Image (cartoon, rainbow, N blue to C red; front, side):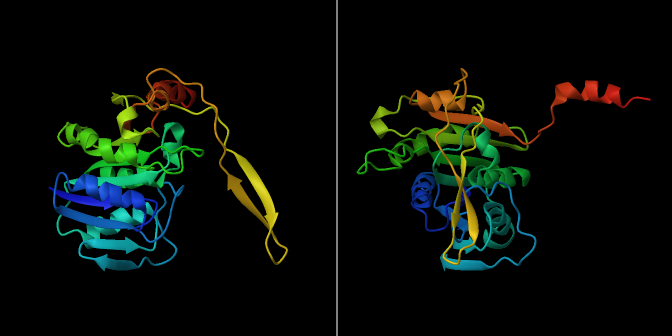
Length: 254
């Protein structure tokens, strides 16, 4: 099985090392194409206004001067010898839950893979900001990654569908299991906008991401993580709200 690995934290991110170790439990035919540096929050951005450079870091290991979407595009068209059977994106350092998947470069890399017709899975490790300093950040992902992936490798999925996996911020032995759940939604609070001045006296603004209070709907990824489970959520790329088509069509009828 040929596997392409990518992420949004950059080619040197520790989470990519974790992902490679997980992938090698299934195959030795591993290819890596990831951004040069961190691209968190880039969503499904594609670089169109400047050229992309491809850099080689070793056998079957490359980076691009662009976004996660750029990395997958280059991986499919210029890096991998042939077409991969699987694209894995991650392991992201931080959660990609609820409506945050729309911002996520990790999930968007998997979206690009799904658009290309390749089975694609995004993996993220939820972290606690005030967690124990000596604890392995990726402990749950290391221990549970292969166990979660194994059933997903041959499960039939519709076209333009991907799978989003999140590991709870727990020691491996504390994880309660795996739950297949729907996407949840945050109580909207996008954080603060911090204003400051640079050394030359000019204003700048920095988005501050603060903890968000959740109203945890039953059967969602947010609830599963809060209860100590690995969350597995199938996502589709059809954003059409089908129930509204009829009512809108009537408004435009002659």
